[in-house]
Image 1 (tube, rainbow, N blue to C red):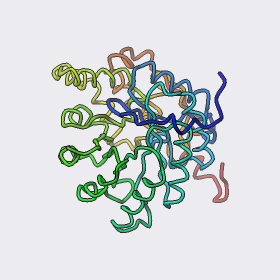
Image 2 (image 1 turned 135 degrees about the vertical axis):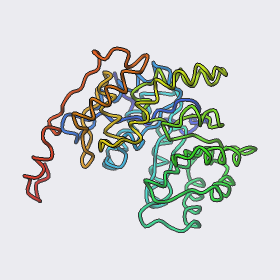
Image 3 (image 1 turned 90 degrees about the vertical axis):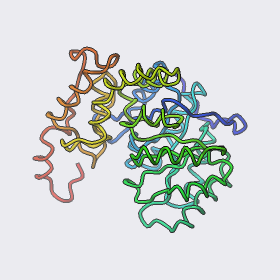
Image 4 (image 1 turned 90 degrees about the horizontal axis):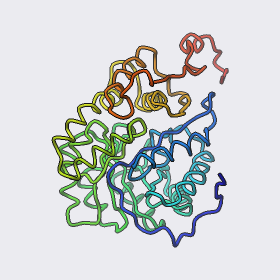
Length: 344
């Protein structure tokens, strides 16, 4: 397949709505974890679209955004967006520390066809509330795309409070808030604040999926949808059709794997857990990039148990597969034997 390498015409990037299942796209890697497996990435995108997902988030946290080199992030945009080619809406995370860098990465994403850009408030040496507002205002003034505010204070250390959200809604192209705080009451408050405005709420907390949708969130930005896109789409359809009993019955099958990925006592982070489970249901994912750590053998058994409940992607435990990548073999022992200057 020939991949287009020229930016899309900026005039072709009109406003498109995000709703339902917005997959936080996982990032396949080669066996070393140091290079993106581009054919596997495009194949995974096609599988998700064929499963009926409603939109894709490129360069999500689940997609190892924090660990990709700047040139890799640009390459992912230049590869994925022309490949998706308008089949479903696409948002791109363009978070950077400075205003100017965020504007540059956002414009690059829009040039290649992004329908919206998802942006964290500046983290680490974060500014005051006035600085956060300034950051979003300047990006909005310079980028011709809808903006998705990204609220994940546990990870970023910066909270977009309801009061700040009210102020940010004055910016015309702020269209969505992705809230990953994990509080259903907060989701309901944000939905209430959004009423009568151009903005809507997307939930980023996988274990809240049906309840957030019932509470008024228009969609889920969903890492676990990499594992179970068919079930995720079916859940949204049940809720859209008012079939709440069916939705909750399906959710009882989906909840174990979603809950495990979000919180467990086996030292499995969300990112490596999702990649391991996605590999187990037959997708080519490869290892995580260091310093993320692979899952243990015991954790793989727990993941397999969770997957076995899924009606489509886990109905037969015999079809689940797991490849033990080289970097997982006795990594604690090997790591202890490395010298401080060894980067292998």
